[in-house]
Amino acid sequence: MSEETTATESTNEVAANEAPGAEKAPEERTPESYMDEIRKLRDEAATMRRQRNELRADAEAWREKQDAEKSELQRQQEQRAELEAKLADTAAENTRLRLAAKYGIAEENLDFLGSGSPEDIEDRARRLAELQKQQIQAPPSNVPVEQLGGPRPRSDEAPDNAFPPSWPV
Image (tube, helix red, strand yellow):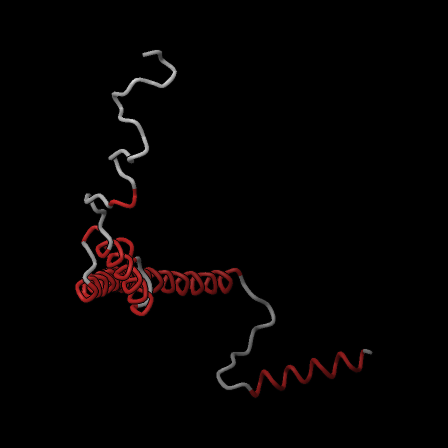
């Protein structure tokens, strides 16, 4: 085992000597060398903190810009959805009014046309127009018909002002 340990130590020394820019570390370190290294590390950390703080402001500005663009995009999408819904409502209302005019449907019956595809609305408009025509074709008549036996008495009946037969006369 000791041979393996010495072999790896010698390989590390060779690798350290061959590494470009590698400094040969002294065997014993003094407190001053430790202080110098600590000072270097502190300076490096301070430089990194300054860079981080400078980039933090830029990153925050970039995030705010992204949020502004995102909210603008969302606002535009919501506005588009509202306008599409209005357009669909207007198109459906236009279809109902056009079919009502085509089939002669009364204004108070427009609600019965409902909503849906234009073909569905047209089918309902056609049926509603037929129902309206049936109502118009058979209006109630105030003219009496003889065979229905209206308010006139029949000839075999006694008049209304006659005495009942059970009364003595």
